[in-house]
Every structure is written in structure tokens, then in C-alpha cells.
Length: 192
Figure 1 (cartoon, helix red, strand yellow):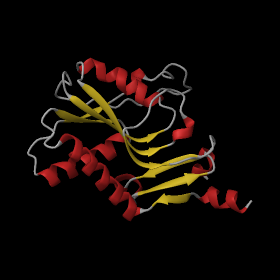
Figure 2 (cartoon, helix red, strand yellow):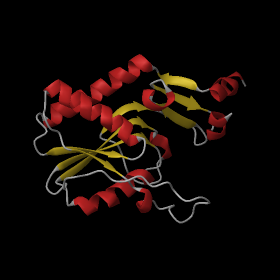
Figure 3 (cartoon, helix red, strand yellow):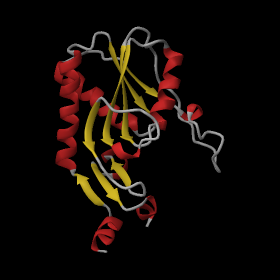
């Protein structure tokens, strides 16, 4: 019972300091793999994946002192498999990609990997920008026991093994005023 009461408030599973270190580690993993990023681009999945992608893009450019690193923000609204089954319409963003991914290594970025459906929609939407040489997936939080589709992350900030009803919330300085990752007993607990 104590566990449930504790979870209702949300348990911090990644505090500000570890949040920053995790992003830094992810950047260095990408640098190890892609060196100068000559044939590699970053693509953030809107809306919340772009918050992580913005930081990674900015940090890699600073570390490597790159003038340019191709980066886009991908709107997947109309590619979702639940697009027509919702009670309310989705609020669409707009895709911001001024380049093609043809023949490039693409690092697809999202904040949380849960069922895999968002990633599937992003892969479908990405096809409109060419045929990439390779696509890898980076996520801040991987909820590995909750997959509906055979999708996995290549670069993982933190892995969370939680029950189906549990809810992981990534909070961002730009929106909530603090960088942290919280675990709640359920999505309803976040609202209360």
C-alpha cells in the first residue's frame, strides 16, 4: 500500500543531474559511431521527441564544433494507426525537414519508446523524404516490457520495467520548468 501511495505522487527515476549526464552519454555514443556526421542526419519525432532531439543536435554540434548537422522535425499525426479512432481530432504540427534522407544514416529520436506505434508511424512518414541507407532509433526512456510491435531502440537513455498501467512522464525545462523523468502508478495519477 505504501508503494501505491508513493507512486501516486510520481517517483523521480531520473533527476536533473542524471538527465543531463544521460543526454551527454547518448551524444557521445552517436559521436563514436558517426564521427563527423557527414552522411548522417537527426530526425526528432514531434511533439516531445523534438525536445530531446533539439538538445542532442545542439550538444553534438558544440562538442564537434560543426557548422552544420542536418536536423529535421517529423510530424507523424496522419500516419498514426489510431488517427481515425479518436474522440477528438489530433493537433497536427508541421514537419520541418529541408533535406532528403536518401542514402543517409538517419537517427530517429523520441522521448519514450512504449508500444512502438509512434515509431512505426515515424518510419512510414520518413519514407516521403527518400530511402535512407540506414535508420537507427534513439530514445531517452525505453519501456521494454510494453511493446506491441517488434521495435527496439539502438540508443537508450534509461530502461524502465513497469507494469502496463504505470505511466512514465518526461518533464522538460522548456515546458515544465525542470528536467526529470517521473514514474506514476497510472496515467490518471498524473492528472490528480
